[in-house]
Length: 452
Image 1 (spheres, rainbow, N blue to C red):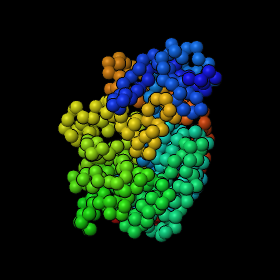
Image 2: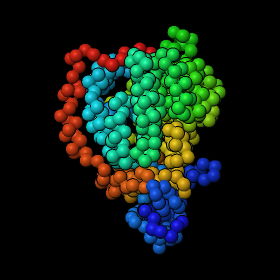
Image 3: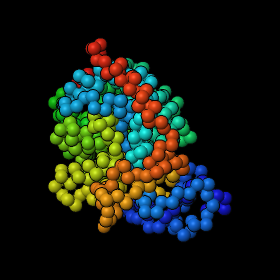
Image 4: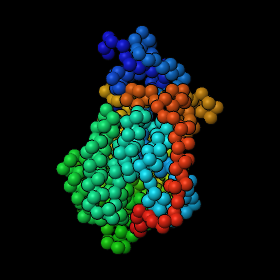
């Protein structure tokens, strides 16, 4: 450590650690030294007691964790939270969501992104992967409020070549933005809305420009069965034959609850890094019969990151809940209470989620050289006491509301539950004024048809 004052020292906490074998552990009475937005040292509280710092946080009684990562969402869709309830996927898209989205203005997207970022920061999310429209507005909000994001401008084949070109232009324009907090991806919507020619062209652009791709695929079993019935291939096999599994910068697949046995060999042969984002709350709400096959994917070395999807489909951007649900649903679907363990769930929430968004060497662990994306969790509440197994307490007893402080790139975005970079009441007021025009479906338009 250098002799000049650190920017921030968090002291007295219990730190979640990863050892050389990536096993989860905890270091008591520890301190984290932050300089220039990165973690300089994780040491003992005693060793840090006399170090000078521009800012100190006394975190006694709290757990310091890597910030959670929302590996797949549509942040601006918080504006549609609760407008399409208790209906199957096809009706949800065609009758409500896609007609409403035809009304979207850039201002709607900006306000939705502000509200979403506030919700995520308060819930301990320090990075999110977003796949939506008018993403310049989202990038501006990310830059202003201090969160980290992996952003892609979504497109359909119905937009023609222009949609793909717009996605590329966005990715190149914002790559490395917000002092490195913004990374970007190409964002074709899905194999059922983007044809093979467009998917192959996307893969070529990704290779040419060194960009990753973020796409919905095998979202549910119906999509897989429809692909097999119509063309004799699964959506995952479509990704393979169009070159998307061979991108050096990586492919992030949203959902994958329709991944079947024959897909596993295809994924295992992928020529580039592939990851899957699981958002279990939405699968339960849509009554999908299967969930992301986390155990099978882990068996072939595919990272599975945690996600919420958009709040229009599951009403929440709570990654803490996604962590608990992932563990519980995996136990249920595998019939094995020993899987997924709390420590495994924490691994998915940290390092595996970081890898899913292409930041496996940057965030996801509290260690020297990583960026200082840190959350402090207060376990003093009656619902988290007593603590017999700290990992189990964090996964199954703690809640997002137990996050006291959120730090991104060394900057404190929330301190003692107070948001420091976003004005929620002002956003709610302005968004409320926009809602009537946004919800109007009398025009009969929709941006796309949902047909698997």
